[in-house]
Amino acid sequence: LKGVFANLMVVSHTKEEFCLDFVNSFSPPILVSRVLTSPAHLKRMIAAFQENMKRYEDQFGLVEAAQPEETPLGFKVN
Image (cartoon, rainbow, N blue to C red; front, side, top):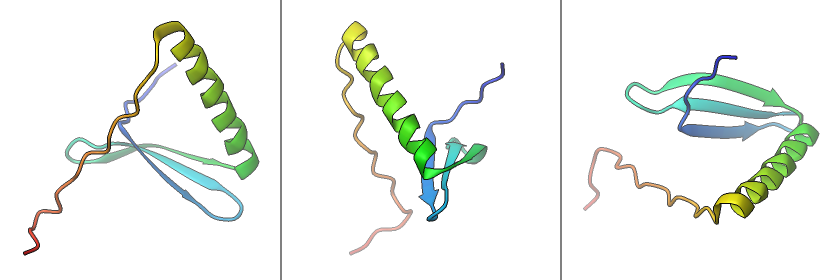
């Protein structure tokens, strides 16, 4: 199996589907994978992530959520 590196995920949705864009944000940013799924399947995915994070923390300890970085827009507002 071949994997790809992504350090950013962008989520968008319509009534019928969710779109998960996985991006390597290093210069220049590159879309490495796009996953389209139904809302019902995404809900099952979230439950699987929560269950696996609990198992991970039970084994290795609490994981602290990273604080979002402030990305400068390239200009200053006075």
